[in-house]
Image (cartoon, rainbow, N blue to C red; front, side):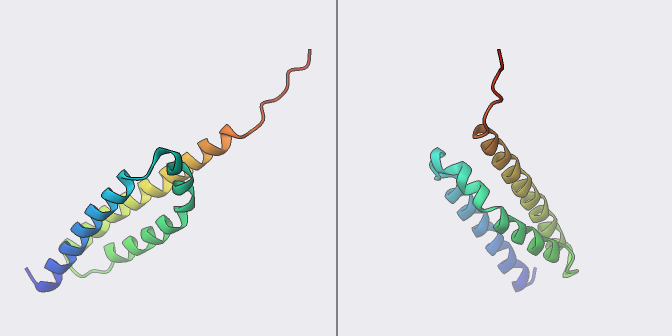
Length: 98
């Protein structure tokens, strides 16, 4: 393995660990607003992972890029679903006319 591949795997592993620790320590009260506010960042990471997956620098880079594309897509879709669910909680119910 080349030094570049080892450094790429090292950065990927660190990002995975740090991301997991940060997300798992967010209080439940702040989780939904935080998810809705980070959809733009997730979109940027999705574009970056698409670039990494299609860069053609080797099989490991393509595999890690594909994994990143899957993870970022799940994050973006989940963020929008949670935001939609949160906004539905604040809609007024139609009044029943008697």
